[in-house]
Image: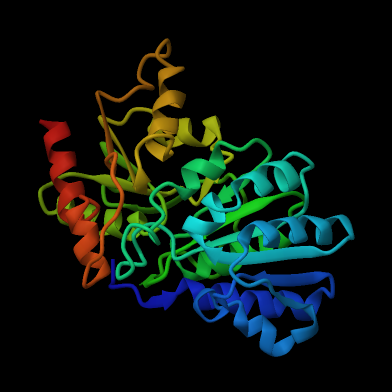
Length: 323
């Protein structure tokens, strides 16, 4: 596979909001004093009358968004993922999720991607928290192209949706003409030419790391199928089993703590199928952050290496599982 170009997911988010704003006058945007970072400020430039700066008051922003939804608007509100999921949890649960309010939440600078600000600003648990809330849909794009499609899908979807946006530019692997559907898992690469003995269910930045690992493993004669799990909830059983059957090793790769994450959920789905011969792999491996918070660093790649979320970590885990 040729080296993929890199693009900003944050910019894709802001630009798509502008496009939606032109198409639908009911689209409104709220921000918690981080518009230049989340890129929602692009919407403010075009539609200042539909842009609400709420200040550093995420709880209030969530409640106001719920009110706007009740009035027939389609509110998108943005802040750092750690604040979106943690600081406004009660408002999300009571004012948005319970009544199924048509609110769209952007958790920006997710995972370890805000490498310079340390553990207080890094969200290693945001998706896990929001996934646990009934009625919530949770999305995690792997690149800028998928981000654009997701934001459009969010606007059309009736009900609350949470999207994680990485702070850094990431390689683009999704095809421009490929339609995005909530709940669908997308194959990105099959280095085994249809005979891969390993499959990696990856999400977010870990899609690109898994592709890199698959290309390295191919040189050792190991075929790997990389799957982009861009919908973290609903995580459909039929989609998991479609790709898991017959594999010797299944790997899950996520930029989040293990507890309550993608790996735990897929493991539970597979465990329910133990009565079906051939459906369960010989080995199951989780690539995720252990029970710890993030840390400050000089760069994003430095943190991914420290927490075992890089190409080498995936390669070593696959080889160990096959042995």
